Image 1 (spheres, rainbow, N blue to C red):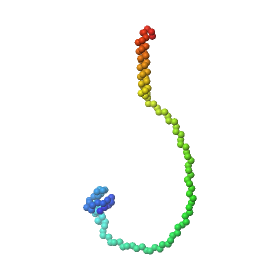
Image 2 (cartoon, rainbow, N blue to C red):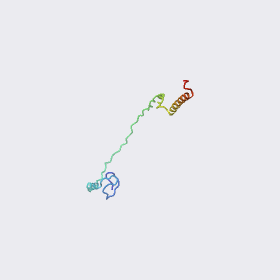
Image 3 (cartoon, one colour):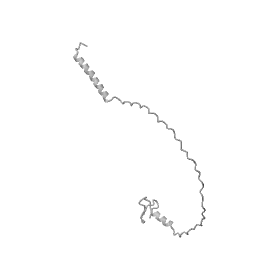
Image 4 (cartoon, helix red, strand yellow):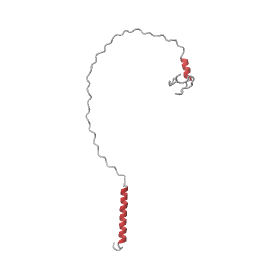
Length: 120
């Protein structure tokens, strides 16, 4: 038997379809109710049809024109990139400032210690 909802094969004694989950009991009842015994349909015979040969109409061929080729457009020139903005002082700059301040302090200490106090 096949499920009328999804078309998958199901067992004849199944109550619901294992594939789509629809209830099959209603489908079985409606199939049984909908199928009254029908008489065999009478064959229908068609009347003979005379066939007359058909000639094909002549076909006119039109010349094919090539599509116009667009002119090449030069690519826009690349603009010079703006330099990146620096976010702050780098480690090298900070080290330079520290060394400079240390050097100035050292010079001041040497000058104050070496020179007599009255020379300045």
